[in-house]
Amino acid sequence: MAIFSFACVFPIIWIIYSSLKTKDEFMLNAVKLPAHPEFRNYYKAFVEGKMAHYFISSGLNSVIAVVVVVFLSFCAAYALSRFRFRFRNAIYTFFIAGMLIPVYGLLVPLFLQFKQFGLYDKFYTLIIPYIAIRLPLPIFLLESYIRSVPVELDEAAHMDGASKFYSMTRILFPICRPAIATIVILVFLDTWNEFPFSLVLVTNEAFKTLPVGLTNFYGQYTSDYTTLMAAMVLSILPVLAVYLAFYKYIIQGMTAGAVKG
Image 1 (cartoon, rainbow, N blue to C red):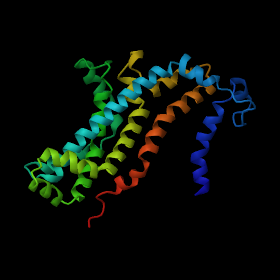
Image 2 (tube, rainbow, N blue to C red):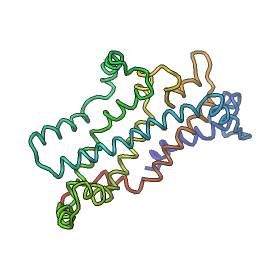
Image 3 (cartoon, one colour):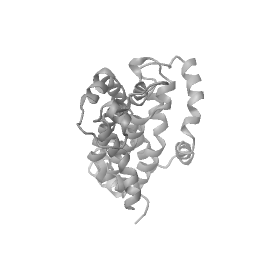
Image 4 (tube, rainbow, N blue to C red):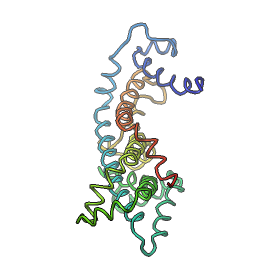
């Protein structure tokens, strides 16, 4: 376990200390620790490499996707778990089937549709597939979680005069915090690191995201590896911050509803 853990952790450590090297020092020995830490690479990555712009673009896409996915998945999961209606099972199966589809197999059809309907290369272009593609898993997690919460809580609230909306937002939503925290981490991580859709569906520099922006640091004949390493360290920080904020809920959220009492 220690060997496997080291194999996972060492690349991150290597990226961090490599980002503090000069370009010549890195070329001489890529593994050696830096003799004199150099922080200019972070300035070059953030200012000269326009990382600030890519951060804003990725941040907006990720935050909007997280908020909309949490809202839609919670509403859908509440309806599917608390109500019995015609075609309920068919609708649930339709959502879950989205987890079985190879996501990037949809890239070419989506590109053609977006071109046809005038959705290509807009500021909202990436938000649409980010939300749609990431809905199935949150619906599955929240539906299982809400189903594990006793329906008597809803009935007691209703007896006290609470509406369905109040019961959903003030009682069930706080109870679902572990599952919601898991969804926030997974959706933010997937959206922040997504590359193929952002590469194909937008060409305007103003709408490009961070993973695409990282490709600016290497080319066919030369690559600025140390600045690239600094940019990668910067790109890791938001994901790490989100994970540290919600990590204590993730295991509880992933296993919620797996065992019935």
